[in-house]
Image 1 (cartoon, rainbow, N blue to C red):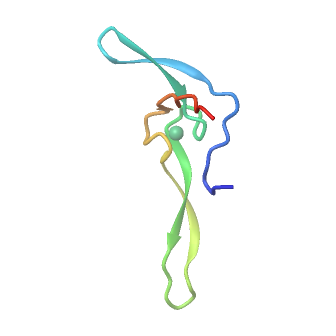
Image 2 (tube, rainbow, N blue to C red):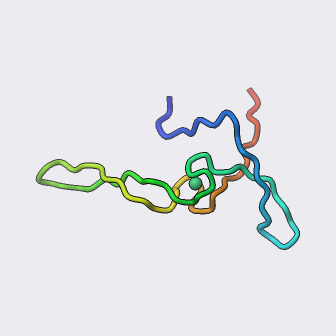
Length: 77
Ligand SMILES: [Zn+2]
């Protein structure tokens, strides 16, 4: 299984208006649930101890801080 792949069996569809009077259906970000922020694992390079991961709050990398992502096209088998 690909690491980092988002399991999203029940996408939440929201409607946004990126342009005046043009509404688009998009998917609420399954990572941050539209909050645009996420807890990120940040690798810290430490040559003495081999490095480690730390956590910090930051812009959600899945939706790039928008709170939504483009709807995935249905995949044909
Ligand atoms: Zn997000």
